[in-house]
Every structure is written in C-alpha cells, then in structure tokens.
Length: 331
Figure: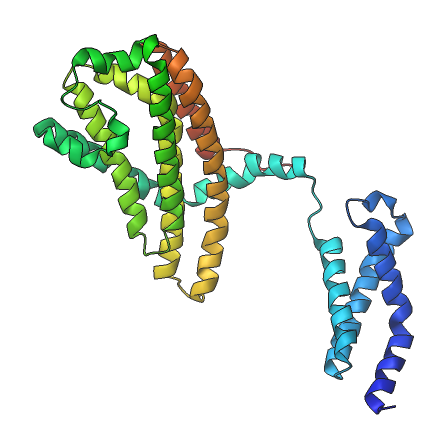
C-alpha cells in the first residue's frame, strides 16, 4: 500500500466522525426543515463546518487523493449555504423584492432612466412634428400591422369610433394585443441588446417614441388628441415607464461594457447585470399590469375624464413607489 493511501486513510479516520455528523445534520435540516434541528445541533453546525473547511484546506495542501477532496468540497459547499445562505420563504422573498429590491434598483439607475426618458420624449416630439408637416412620414414611421386602417386616409369618424364605439371592441382587442406585444418586445430587446454599446437600446426606445408621436399627430390633425391620449395613457403610463426602465437597464449594461472602470470588464458587467436584472424582473410585472389595463380598462371605460384620472393616478403611484423617500426597514 502506497504512502499516499496510508496517509489519506489515517487522515480520514481521524476526522471522518465529524464529517459524518455534519452530513447527517445537513440531511436533517435541508429542504426547509431547520426546525427539526435541536438547539445543540444548531450550535454544532458552524463548528463542524469550520472543521470541515480546515480539513479541506489540509487535504489540498498535502495532496491527498482526489476522491476525498471532492467529497470535502461538496460537503463544505452544502454546509456553507446552509449556515450562511438565505433561507427565506418564497413569500418573504417576494415581499422583499417589491418592498425594497425593485425600487432600490430603479433608483440606482436614475441617470440611465433620465437618458432613456429624454430619448423617448425627443422621439415623440420628432414623430409628431414630422407627421404634422408631411403626412407621408406616417407610413414610414408606423409599422404596417399597427395602423389597421388608422392612417391619414381614414375618416375622422373612423378614427373616433376606435376610441368610443362599442362595436369596434373586437377589432380594438386585436389592436390592443398587437400594441402590447410590440411594446413588450421593444422593452425586452432594449435590455437584451444593451451590451452592444447602448446603440440598439437607444434606437429601440426612439422607435417607440416616434410611433407614439406619429399616432398623436394623426389624431391631432382631426382634433382628437385629448381623446386619444386618454385612450392611450390609461395603460400607456405603465407601459411607457416599463419601456423607459428597460432602456435604462440596457444602458447600464452597455455603459459597463464600454467603461468598466477599475474592475475587469466581466466583473463590471456582472455587477451591472445584477441591478439591471432586478429592474427587468419588475418591468415584466409592469407589462403584465399594463396588459390588464389595456385589455380591460381601456375598452370598458369610455369616459375621457375617467381615463385621464386613471392615467394620472397610475403615474403618481409609480413615481411614488420608485422615488418617494421611505423609512429603512426595521430588523
């Protein structure tokens, strides 16, 4: 028998009882069964964990057999996550996400959010002015599937019927579904393509703004701009904010790629991705809420004042949720 084998066997015999006890406690307490452990077992866990870490360090230093080292690595990893890892329940994690994680991540992206909002606003104004001065721009800006006959050749009565006529509800549902899908795709792509030096993100946000400005110019030419904005913003406040935040998340990723600072580029992108990813998880929630407002509220609420009231309340609530000062959580 080789000296290495004898040394490994002796090393294991001296310490194996502690490893087995740690493994047994982990099996007993894993899977959300921490309450099954006695007080003395809970006290023993961190001591046994540190002992296992020490054993792993020695095993690596004196080059013991690979199987023993792999066993200790697995045991130490399990013990680390059990002793120091988060064991919050799903409900607690969701509460923490909505209460602190999501708004904190959104506030951390305030510069990128301002840039994204500025691009969207400039694009809306540009789309509005282009179509107001030359109606031919409307076809160049608006995707064909989005118009569905709502173009400069449509009559004022047809454009107005889209906003109020109950007989148009079926067609309106199709249009609403397409509009939601289109904006959701823009939001997701604006984030996903941010790594390409922010350029695709800026273009996607601008495209969304140009389409909105073109549509507003069309209805303004028929004296229907207030009615259109009420019809749009009953859900559009939430949807546009989601697009702005998605653009901000994409800008954060792209900025980390271009200017990683003192960190390695991959480390900078990983750090940016954690914040941006949290924001994007919230953006998905916002898109779902916008879809509900778009599919139900906008089609059932036909009063302009009610539509504007819902839009204004949603804007105030979202801004307060993200940016209003809040007390630090008590422990």
